[in-house]
Image (tube, rainbow, N blue to C red; front, side, top):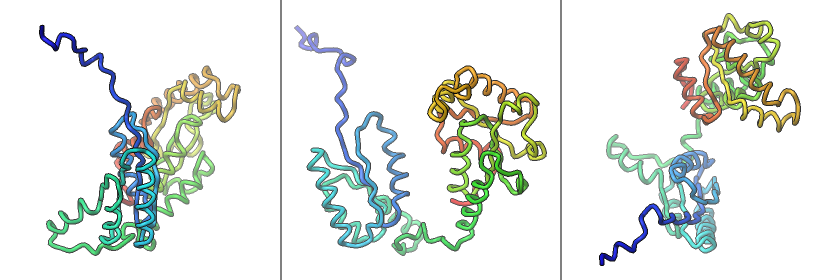
Length: 290
């Protein structure tokens, strides 16, 4: 008899539970680049269990050795090698880190050498170079955009709308404020945002002062069930948060945006990054910063 006849079909074999791995984001700067890169990589592995630890400003041999000790302690505790996403620039500090009992993913080590070969130049290996633009025009543009966006959040002011790059509209709690701040902080985009409220739907027109800036308008909408859940956290058991009211507001907002020729985006299942990228592409806005 063929022994394979007693084997379970592959579909009947339960997949093994993913093992636990602590993930360290190690940097001689803020650690934001390492963490952003790491999250992009880890998002490809569904169900992976991991504790995530950012270790910024590892800019000396002593700090690097302390970092190695902490990584090794995590390896002993988890029973698995941690994963280290490193953006250490200094070769000596990065060399110390490589003594850790971990999978080391060295961002600069992987890319600096090929770039040096391609450019025919040696890297300066300068710590904090990517964040040294405090006096640069890009930095000033970002700060100006943040100040503008905070001053024009939730329809606070109509003053200076001609200086805006984009004006977000949508019902309350549809994601306008976080999207506005993301665009300002990340790209130096000046964003105003205005809530569409029942009074606007009754008048069947945009909030005062927005019509002449129609070419800058972009709408956000959201699933009524999700909106109701969000609003319940803010005002439990209120008409404002009721599913019936949320459905009505969203329906009315979409009718108004459709009549005014405003493009809009469903934000329910999209990240802020996706919303921001779609908006910039749709309105053909150049990023002010990188």
